[in-house]
Length: 198
View 1 (cartoon, rainbow, N blue to C red):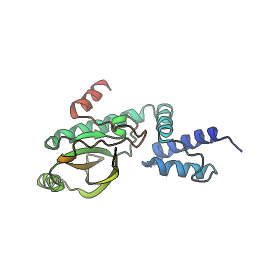
View 2: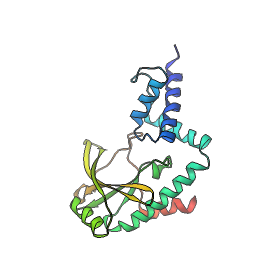
View 3: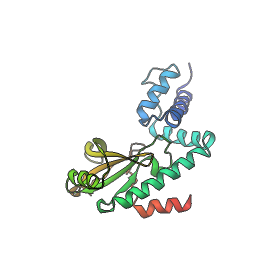
């Protein structure tokens, strides 16, 4: 039987391919599917999310060295435009588009702040932007998983998800789904700096 460390590495590699090529965005789903494809039980030898993230970055560097940076740059440019448009709600970019592991399937995820979700709805409606109401679960330090209202719309070819935080929730500390540390959030000027460097 293959040793556990080798099995974890194999699962991470296959999961990375599933994310990069097939567009699976949930790391847990990707690694369980990868485990089954490799002949393991779906809950055995599962790598950490950090190991998946590293395997994904490696896969993109080796197999998508021109395609992925181009797609990432396009997503970041769309994110910057959306953030400028949504300036009244102090948007912050989070997730793979910020960290650099976005694929052509990735959503642009923005955290926005307002007094009530209806403010976002009216803002989009008044500007003729069709959006779907949804929700997203975010892990909050000291609180655990919390569900937040969200809106999803298309900007150009990219899906944009606005996760809505109440003004009184500005001090909440979202946790990274990758390593459990503080979730990195970027202001518009920080996203523009990333674009200047690319």
